[in-house]
Image 1 (tube, rainbow, N blue to C red):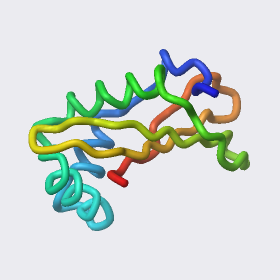
Image 2 (cartoon, rainbow, N blue to C red; image 1 turned 180 degrees about the vertical axis):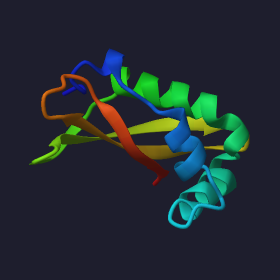
Image 3 (tube, one colour; image 1 turned 120 degrees about the horizontal axis):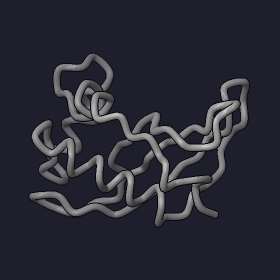
Image 4 (cartoon, one colour; image 1 turned 60 degrees about the vertical axis):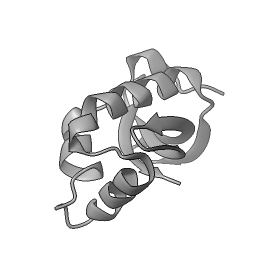
Length: 110
């Protein structure tokens, strides 16, 4: 199955910049280190990662996860090639109650 309305997926560049790729973030620093060591993806590659996530939201299969009071959650895994390597990234999404499009909640290298 695909993400519902994946072509309208919201991938907040600020979330990537301030969390997933931020080596100074208290919780995101570990993700940032792995993105850098395995793929060579750093803060300067935010737009590249954003594009890859949007493409995965449209093209890759989604695995439905829990449905809670906030909405329906999904996981989408995809291959990405960075400046220094290739890896599989897991992206997490939510379609909030009352909305019909997915929003990125997190991503990390598997």
